[in-house]
Length: 310
Image (cartoon, rainbow, N blue to C red):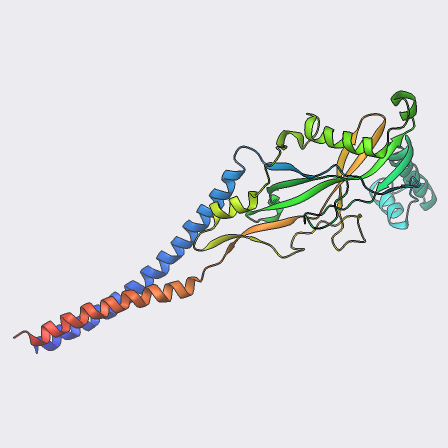
């Protein structure tokens, strides 16, 4: 009878130990996953510890095609603008009075943007990262963390390039003639990479983005998490731009020196995120099976010992 009770006790212990193993393994793998994710994020943050972005000259300056275009005319108010003005600014105005007010505001905005333009040139430039594709103009490569609004631990890369050159009315008088498009492009690049007034200049370092993604992957990737390129279009910024391309570029500041103004565009971002690449359930089942097997061997040995014991 004692042997029967002992074997029953062993069975109960086996069941209890199996349940404990299942619970422990489940919690252990979850903690491991959280620890590895925190490590991946921490290793990513190390790359941006001393500066928030990397800026590098991808190529250029090269020649490019360009053409003179008409300076845009002042916009005319549409019905939505007029109704919005009446609703938010002055409900006492008639539609015609509100339309006149909106027209004046649009005229002021136009004067501020285009009023001192003498001529306007569009550059036939859209940058290519692929060495085998034609390259025109110049392009700066920027690598930075993804914006906070994405709620994503990752990075994005994009290219900044010149897209438009506007000559001011006063340029021929002060500049001693109108500088060429090529001269304006070169001086714009020099300003962006060398002048302290440029937003990108503090982060510019020649060769800083070379193999940077590979270096990040080596430091970040672990058993459960990898820095992975996101599908194209995951983060897309809507704006007027290169509608002949699948992903239109976005206006991105520029430079002006009183004689001419160079407007930059930036490409849509290519983003990389820290993605889970493991299989928690598979790992939990595998580890649980190993521990259960060891427990079974141990309990089987104990049962044999109890049976044979007099």
